[in-house]
Amino acid sequence: MSEDKKILSDLGVTIGVLVIIAIVISFVAIGLVDEKPMSAAAEKKVLDRIKPLGELATTLAEAKKASPIVEPPVVVAKEPMSAEQVYNTACMACHATGVAGAPKTGDVAAWAPRIAQGESVLFEHATKGFKGMPARGGSAQLSDADVTAAIDYMVERSQ
Image (tube, rainbow, N blue to C red; front, side):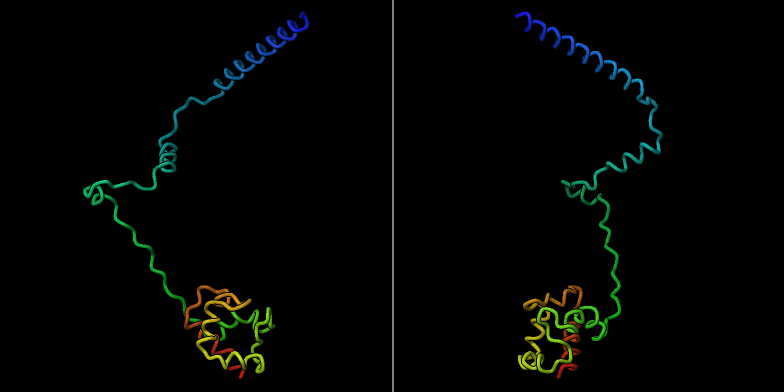
């Protein structure tokens, strides 16, 4: 039993020392804290960072007082690409080398059965994707007119 009392006594001393260390650390930390108030500019920056992004208008009067909706900037359309530019940016990587079974541009034998299916089938395959080819050649920003122009460009060179 004396051994148990010794362990409890040692445990009590250890806990007491840890409590004293914690109290000393607390006083040191309190002494290190800067008690000066924030400058007005710093306080404004903090308030700007934590302000809500919006407010909920629960009545019609509140909704009318709310700030007006800001219209998004008008995006100016870029100059349309030529058929050759579309081919070079979206089609050439596969159709110039025959990657993943793509018919090479200029290969009459490979293109003949595809051309025989009609332009509507070629357009559908080009816009929706077909086998290993991604839709619109992987360039989602291409318009239908761009895709049609690229198809015509490849067909002209493959007849």
